[in-house]
Amino acid sequence: MRRFFLCGLAAVAAIALADSSAWALRIAVPQAASTKTKVLQADAVVVGKVVGIDKETVDLEQFPGGPKAAFTVANIKIESGLLGAKNVTHIKVATLKPQEPAPGGGPGGPGIRPGFRPGGQPAYIPAEDHEGLFFLQKHPTSDGYYTIAYSHAPILSTDAKYKDEVAAVKAMAGTFADPVKALSAEKEEDRLANALSLAQKYRVAPANNQSGVLEETPIPAEQTKLFLKVLTEADWTKNADAPRLADALGLMPGNYGIPRVSAGEGEEPLAARQKALKAWADKYGAKFEVKQVSAKPAAQGGKDTTPRATPTPPIIRR
Image (cartoon, rainbow, N blue to C red; front, side, top):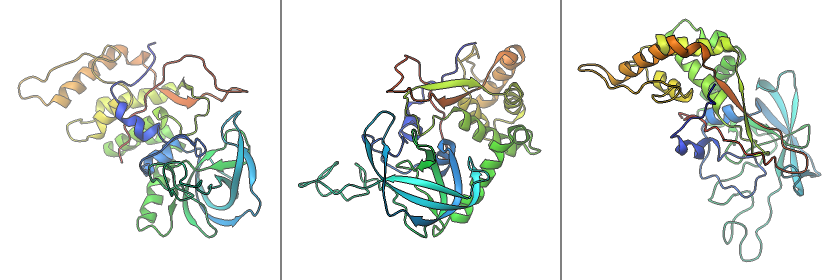
């Protein structure tokens, strides 16, 4: 089976791959990630409150095998663990302690303020009584600590859209918790929306990839069949999520032997594309595999330098 790599989506790298870990100091992120990207790349998503900041800092590696630095530790009391933090009441979030600018200017230019990254992107600094929706990544070498990526700042309860954002994230969490149920939703529009979120969850690169190497593993065959069912039964001309889902799964004309077709007279281009996909699925769909992208664990003593092609993540719609 041909390995699945999406092509022609270089622009998305700035959205999904630029969101690196909170301690990769050499990377500048120009803008905040969307809420959807934050959820897709998080190891844990919680609704909670900062109930205290430890007086003493802890020395943690900035990356596997790298130098240690002082991290400030915030203690978050969890009100609701939406993803990756079930049956947990508290989480420790380690934040790289901001450095005072060097004489004549710090990293990124003269007079840069502590807590800001090159390019003007503010790094989130937890403070006591901050309450909200937190998007967290596990620290790569220190169990028990989480971090917050540069562009993955929490949505605080003071935000005007806070309640709407929490409701949307809860809906996504429900989709990820039971993919088969989500892909079998009664309404077509719900099936498509759920399938698109799942496809992006499976195909987006994690924010916290310290090894520099990505792996792919097949998802359960039942889910792959349901993805194809959703695509072939939907009306592509009435819901833009249908072609987006096909793109996210790599099911574009020219991939996997899917023919490139031209719409006939009076025929919608999307209808022609779907017709070609249906014909392909009838013949080859049973052999198709959707594969989940994950970070290969960091090798002891440094990066894994095994040469591999790197999957490109799908477009994340804000």
